[in-house]
Image (cartoon, rainbow, N blue to C red):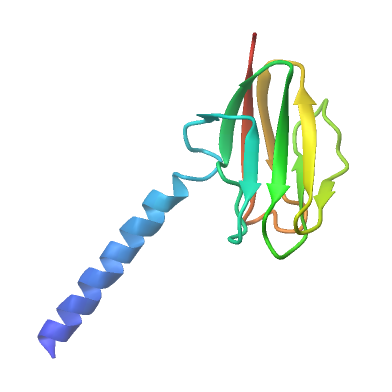
Length: 120
């Protein structure tokens, strides 16, 4: 019985550590240099953090079975969500350097992203 309890405790600690590490893959992760973001069947933006140069058009593609959106959370950008049905895509051109945060307006607690725009 003690051995089983130890195994369960070790498994719980390992799962907790894995969950903490996976949180780093979200919008706070190091930005990836790309202009495309996928919405896979997992309620996430992949990659969640990207970097582009000013003047780049970023395209989000909804590969999930559910409707999602891109809704910018920072001022100076459109506030209406860019809604995507399954299989659809949306695009936005970033013209000004800065860090821009966005979310899915339907699933804001799970789906967060960041675009870092640098000077050309």
